[in-house]
Length: 109
Length: 119
Image (cartoon, rainbow over all chains, first blue to last red; front, side):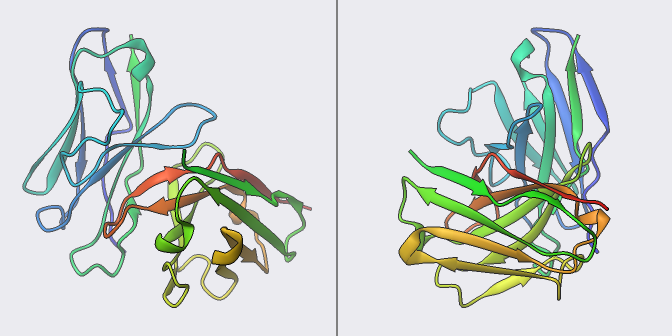
């Protein structure tokens, strides 16, 4: 089955830029999506189609894609951004269209 | 305002059954594809099942195929997940999630309902 690989953890100081990566062989052909999940809460979509931001999501959240890696960038990180972040995408054939990465814990120091 | 409210979770013995429900409001339920996504305690997200807007197309993750059945009642704005032959590894918070039109992402999620499979 298809896999998406994320780093388990990323740490950043307030005001700095956090970058969370997600790697997968099919990412050059498939869009990626990003979710933020705070403890005890449901996930929230923060980026769709690699780099689009849903309404209501702060501009400091952005997404990019390069080859087999997509990146969620949070500029000017705030304490409230501390959460787990998950990428999601599909394999190249679409056989497994709903695959999640293992998640990355963002810690704001 | 879009709202998805799950119910039906609880404690069940291995081999038992449970039926989850998701009540939708704030949008035209019959126009949207829907999903169940679960999260085991302290673990990541796992997609479980998908159903098209009409209910005519259904997909399951390999881990639940043959044991779980997704369905919907568009007249009642409700989504269901019938879970049979439950195993300890099915223990998780189960989320109802709406598919973004024509895309693979989930744009709205419920708050989840906890299913615990234990003797």
